[in-house]
Amino acid sequence: MSNFQKIPDESEQKDQQLWELAKARAGFKGHLTSYFVVISFLWIIWLISGSHLSERGIPWPVWPMLGWGIGLTFHFLGAYVYPKSNMVEKEYEKLKRDQQK
Image 1 (cartoon, helix red, strand yellow):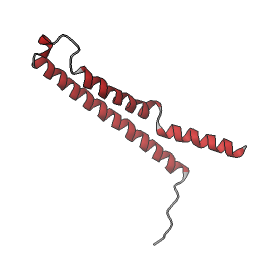
Image 2 (cartoon, rainbow, N blue to C red; image 1 turned 180 degrees about the horizontal axis):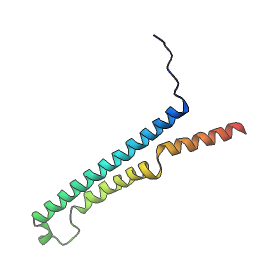
Image 3 (cartoon, rainbow, N blue to C red; image 1 turned 120 degrees about the vertical axis):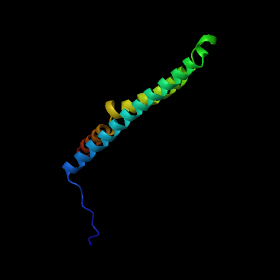
Image 4 (cartoon, rainbow, N blue to C red; image 1 turned 60 degrees about the horizontal axis):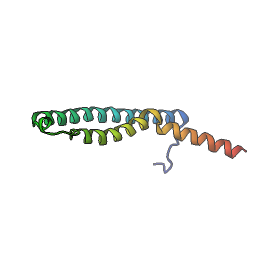
């Protein structure tokens, strides 16, 4: 048995980056689905309970919708707009340029 670990080559590293990105995006899609299911359920409870007939302000389901929506927005940004693999790659390239100077 060897005590040495195999160092992944560049193609395996790229595949690992794609795998991480795919996991982040799949996680976001699951998060989005649960958001819509739960928020819909809260609005249905609000309608059935008759709260909309007696209240004169902002309906209470708006608050969890906004709070959870903020988290969902950050999840989207991390999965689609600023994926970690791109940030790591940019930082690596910057360090390589700085080292060559």
